[in-house]
Image (cartoon, rainbow, N blue to C red; front, side):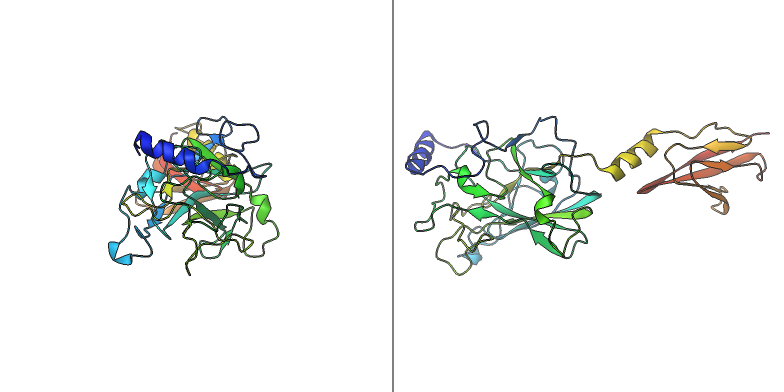
Length: 318
């Protein structure tokens, strides 16, 4: 959003006197854990997202829910095009391929803050079945004796495991290993990632609290159509083995085609042959299938990968 010089000066003034915390500092500064949107460690981006809008101001539900952006703005690479969640809003990514815990952080969430200190926050949760979600243990050391105003400032090093702690174009990393002791999620088969907008209102019955019971203080109220957490993108930091194998299947080709005997399809785990009317004629496990029982003609060949399948025309010659 475009802000006046007066507002930027106000934000800087609000930040004066805040001490540094023990967690990752602002993007680009020593000790930061921020991941740039063009970082080489990003391997892919989320391709599916649904959003349940929250309020302009949860204290005034008659104002209705926020309206800025669309769920589609949260898919693909981080580009500054966002969907706003509003107070208590939710965004859920249904992953095309499950992700698993690997060395270091596994994914990163991007918001679109215009500065290092205007921070609208969200909790991050994961699930292995789309029903049971486990929240990353977030920690806020931000004071909660005085409300952070709508354009107030927050020191990012006072925050841990909150999406939105870094300015636009920089993602907050999350490591699935932190949830390894949870009995409600399999960190080696994560199918959904959910963001829950932090209601940063101090002294309210609906105030958000971190994993330690601390009230989380972030800008409130933000009573406008783009209020609350602004979701830009979800980046994956490790290749998905299932995604890689599916990609390999789609990039490979069966050979020889036309064929008079065996046909091979690299990376397939099973092959089957169908008539043009859809009748199943042959099936075999692995990358090869023997076509000798079939008469010359045109058929369909289907290859099954570890997560998906492909079908194309097969010609059997004499």
